[in-house]
Amino acid sequence: MSEKFKILDDKLPHFVTFTVVRWIDLFTRIEYREVIIKNLKYCQKNKGLVIYAYCIMTNHIHLILSSSDETNLSNTIRDFRGFTSKKLLDAVKNNPRESRKKWLLKSFRSEGKKRRSNETYQLWKRNYHPLELDNHNLINEKIEYIHQNPVKAGIVFDASHYAFSSASNYSGKQGLLQVRNIFE
Image 1 (tube, rainbow, N blue to C red):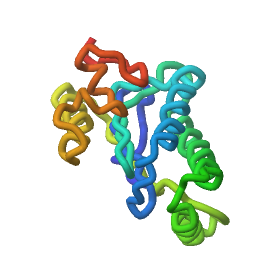
Image 2 (cartoon, rainbow, N blue to C red; image 1 turned 135 degrees about the vertical axis):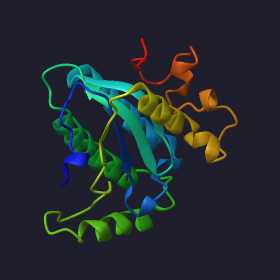
Image 3 (cartoon, helix red, strand yellow; image 1 turned 180 degrees about the vertical axis):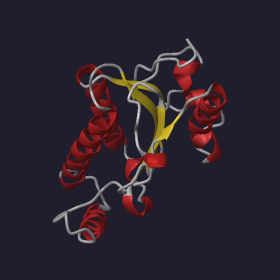
Image 4 (tube, rainbow, N blue to C red; image 1 turned 120 degrees about the vertical axis):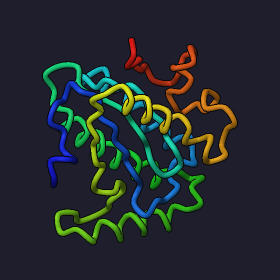
């Protein structure tokens, strides 16, 4: 992996995107988005994860994050992705209302078989390309990009109205997750 896509300083904010394999629209169901929210809260409370901005779209998640203490941000991300993968697969398997269950599991199994190190399922695309945000212009650009995702997708007209985003936090309202305003 090139130096460009490595986390070198855990304390600096990084822009990351976690994408579901095959761009599958997994997060159309609220219960799957809640798995992500719950586990991000856990990482904030127990692993020193600092979230500056986020947005959960139907098939990917954008985050700006760093680490607040002695924890390694790469390890936190690895643990989050591994744990949420298992939880989301269980949620799909055990959801009696999931009409796409057979297709979803077949797709995740097929992706898992592509890698020798994976014997079962793969939910997340392998790379998330962390980008270190080392200046205010870049930070502003990425926050704007994250918050405008649901607007550009036609889900909402105003970014602050999208519940699964930090845009509401930045507009003075309480969001689903605590975020640290990067400019304060």
